Length: 95
Picture 1 (cartoon, rainbow, N blue to C red):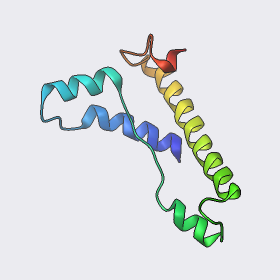
Picture 2 (tube, helix red, strand yellow):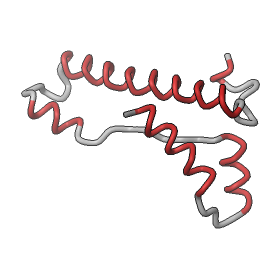
Picture 3 (cartoon, rainbow, N blue to C red):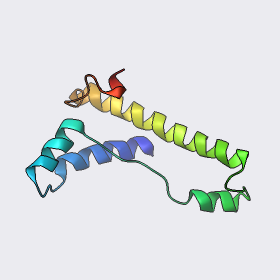
């Protein structure tokens, strides 16, 4: 799911309406996307996990590690097809 969302958010950058030219230029140069989750506290509640428990903390880390890895992988796949984003060289991701 994360890879599909990452690819789709990348397409949104190209098709989005930008109210000012500076916003368009910035998004095209940096190609930022944002991913997250909803309902994490609800999941913990259904699993009867106290929100601040070690088990909930580990599950939270596992979920976000999985999302992060898949998003990075999808981003690399996009870069193989279209080249890296303009400001990739020297960015933290390039290290």
